[in-house]
Amino acid sequence: MQKLVRISLWMIPLVLVSLCSASQYGAAPTGDEKAEKAPAAKHSVTGCLQKGDEMGGFTITGKDGKVWELHGKKVDLSGHVGHTVTVTGATSNMSKEDEEKVEANEKKEYGEKKHGDLRVSSLKMVSESCK
Image (cartoon, rainbow, N blue to C red; front, side, top):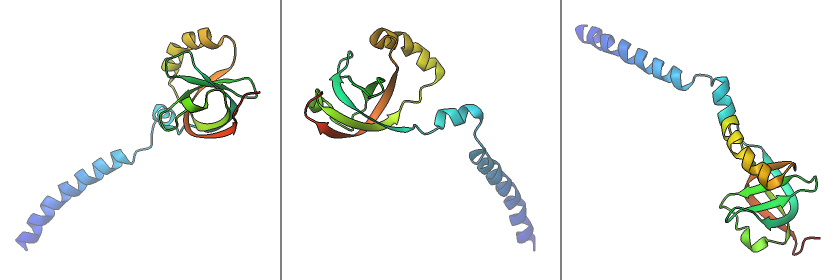
């Protein structure tokens, strides 16, 4: 009987410690955490692939006139410069602070045109030329 009492005395603190740490991992994210961990939206753009202003950079202008700066290493874009392609990827989810940092440079590059960033995950060639 004494062994059972001793085991019980050790088990209670262990269970309480386990429950406390488990509740922290299962806690609902706050508003800021939700914004940071929100999955990036998938997006496809068809247009003429061009070399970008930055070294190793590429851009594509969609049919709506929006210029997309393309990023990512999953797809080799260099062999398709001057081709009409459809690229698919995740739109960039930058924080407001990061967005403000790059905004001045992007305005210089794109002027008043709408622009965005796309991490390319796939490419489909539509035509070997841009019309």
